[in-house]
Each structure stands twice: as C-alpha cells, then as structure tokens.
Length: 168
Image (tube, rainbow, N blue to C red; front, side, top):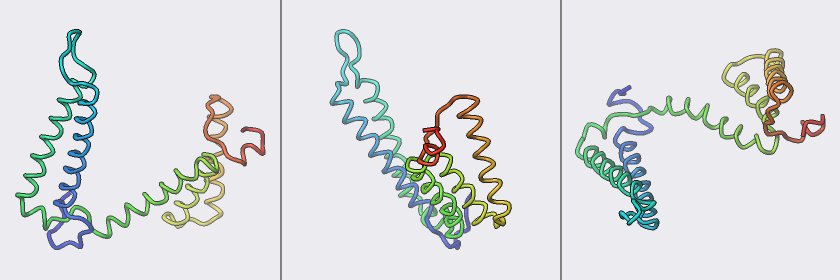
C-alpha cells in the first residue's frame, strides 16, 4: 500500500528497493563464485556441478542490476514512504517478542517458552487480566503437550521443567 508523500517515513520505497537489489546482487555473487569453484562448464559426461547455478546466479545478478538502475532513476520513490514510524513500531511489537521467544525455546523448552510468549501477548497487546492469561496460556500448552508428546509421540524441544516431571 503506497503511503502519502508527507508521511512520517521510517523507510522510503527507494531505500528498501536499493537494499533488496544490493542484497540479491550479493547473493548472486556468492552463487556465481561458488559455481566457478565447483566448475560451470560442460564436461564430457555432461554439465559440471556449477553449470546451472552459474546461469541462475547470472540471471539473478542481471535482474538485480536492472532493478537497482530503475530505482535510482525514479525520483518519486525517494519521497514515498514504505512504512511509517507508527507502522514500524507495530511490526517491532510483534518481531521483538517473537525473537525473544525463539531464543528461549532452547534453554526453557518449547512449552515454557510458549507459555511466556502467550502470556506476554495477552498482557501487553491484548490488555487481558491475569485471571484470563494464566488459564489460557497454561491450558493451551497443556493441550499441546498432551497432543504432541502423549498422543502423537512427537518429541518437541524440552527444558528443565519437563525433565523434572519425567519427560526429558
């Protein structure tokens, strides 16, 4: 969705177009370099391992350069907001807790980390009371624990709490 030109931009369309084009160009360079390392010629017994990746990398690089040039030549992208500061704060309100959740899965186990994750969102974003948060967060994870660990016998990452109750 295109934003107004006067909006309080956290990032413009031009900035992100350039960043994506350069990122894909770097990825293309890695693909091309590794294809050259593997061999990208046609051998006696057919194509070498890097033959097809080399040409895919070339196509990606070419497309990236075309996008970069088109973006640099389009002055309207410099004033058009891709995301406003308010919208970016909303994205971060989900992204930061999600990153913390992912980091907590290994040391705490998926069930405890999920209880914390659900409780955080219900408290911070949903503005629910603890009388609603506790039963929902724990009930959901008890249900998932029974479904995955007991009924389907699918082992998920566990932490110290599960080890205490014998499900390590």
